[in-house]
Image (cartoon, rainbow, N blue to C red; front, side, top):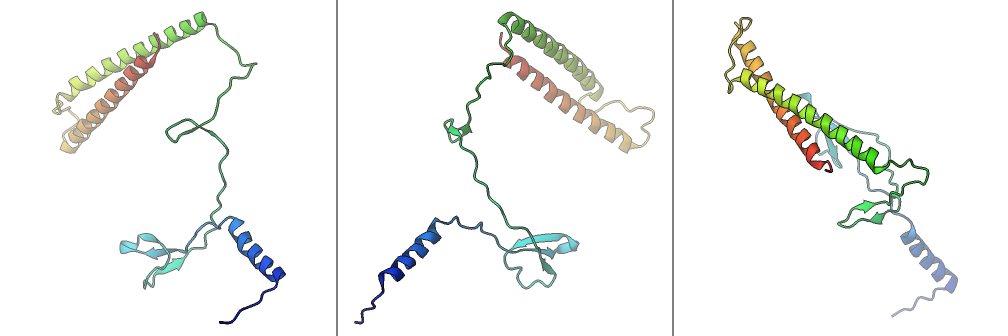
Length: 174
């Protein structure tokens, strides 16, 4: 067995190179991206080797840059939250004014809900369970089908709006 004698400066330099390489951040992993002509001329994007396809071109993309996020405090369940402190010069509203504003908001939401429900009942009556009456300008059956589909969509949108208003009202403090 042969023994290799290495001087201390060479050994220290080698250890520093190895450790120095580990302390450096690793570059972002990237691979070549190719755009290939797929079926019917639709472009397909592929990572790595495009295979044996002749209609592929390598894209010249910029390197991926990663930036570490700022520090946050953990809010539990893996979510990061930051403390939202109210500045001292932030205007404060007394409780009577806030209750008045909340009451006005409730009144506006209830009025919007009543309006939405009235509009919704009119749409449902016109829709007539999917068989609205044909109008004079609907000699073409497709026009009738289009109006029926439009009414169905309007009803779905109205129901979603009414549900949203009810949810908003339920979230208000009494």
